[in-house]
Image 1 (tube, rainbow, N blue to C red):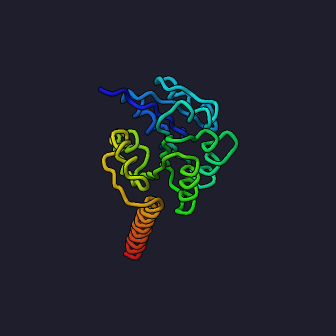
Image 2 (image 1 turned 90 degrees about the horizontal axis):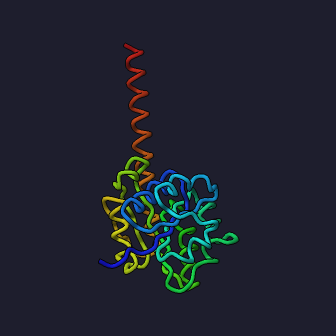
Length: 202
């Protein structure tokens, strides 16, 4: 059996740490990084290496995942000093699993490809529980060949992967899903409020 690729994971928040932890448990050699280094400690205890910067994480890794909290942090990790772009070189694979807007992911993808890297976006639908259990839904878009190459890792992190086409389609679909979930939550709240009013009227 071929050796597993060396994996880097940027962003040790609730979702990133859970997904990276599943890759460690599956036997992948994983290096992690987070702006607050103390958040890397649980993964280090599992056997992951800890990098000092995003740039130093990328250099020894074959496939780099990122999961940050918002567009500003996603851009900071990529474009900041000692960030992703400082480490990206020809053939490096960057998979951004952050939930960001279409413009942000297109900007990041174009910058990675311009440096010779390979890129897909892969925002996820799900929360902490599904992330820990490997039950996320992954919405990928970009270079389809790269998506196929990293699918074994997606299968560890999620239960289903959908390839949606060009970069930006994943971000659009994730925001549509969030919108539908928001509408459902509002409808539930309205229903509960109406029920409470009816009980008080009775």
